[in-house]
Length: 265
Ligand SMILES: Nc1ncnc2c1ncn2[C@@H]1O[C@H](COP(=O)(O)OP(=O)(O)OP(=O)(O)O)[C@@H](O)[C@H]1O
Image (cartoon, rainbow, N blue to C red; front, side):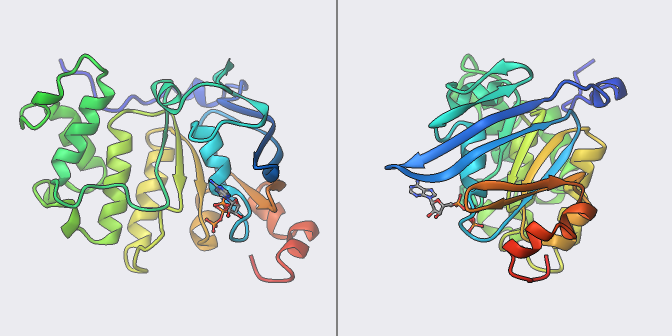
């Protein structure tokens, strides 16, 4: 019997007290200018943390540090207890850390199914032959399951360039999910998505978190989206972590309110 494309962690794992991810005093500077300053927090298995903060607060930079795109200047990062501070992005991906980017990372002239098939092949490791990836019989279960999960089955043969913004975001999620990551970083998944498409995309992200049991970190400006999804809200401000608490506590936190100069969160 073929292995399911998605593994669901046992309920006990969701109650595990050991953090999936731990940041200790993480810093990143560019030519001596601090961009991320002394950020420390832990993420529990199955948790959903949403990152908010004004433009330029350092949210994407923090995601780049966690995913290994930038090396930390100081501090440390542990994934499942292993020190990954100096590990390259691809090594972190092999440990189960996946991410999407603020701007679309799709090939407009490639079909939806081929995007997912190529990602499945890449996840299968360096021994998989890239000459074979276009064969439609490669990774059929993974491709079909992932397209079904992301509600893109009917768009399998459509070129990515012909998709709506919301469908492009779904395809980016599909490309991510087919490698079965345990910890998922989503950088502004609603960016460019029309108001009509936001609810369906929100539900998809919710199902990735709740039904697949994935641990999720997400940068997002839509507070209405976040309040229904996040277990905790992290507020970034001038490169520092200003607050990290339940959404209810964060929205009434006077330090956070002052940082936003009285603007509604
Ligand atoms: N590679 C880089 N080199 C120099 N400065 C950078 C680099 N990347 C980011 N910065 C600067 O770091 C600061 C934080 O940027 P970052 O993109 O992390 O903020 P953000 O909170 O994600 O903002 P937004 O909500 O607008 O995406 C900004 O002042 C930005 O110009």
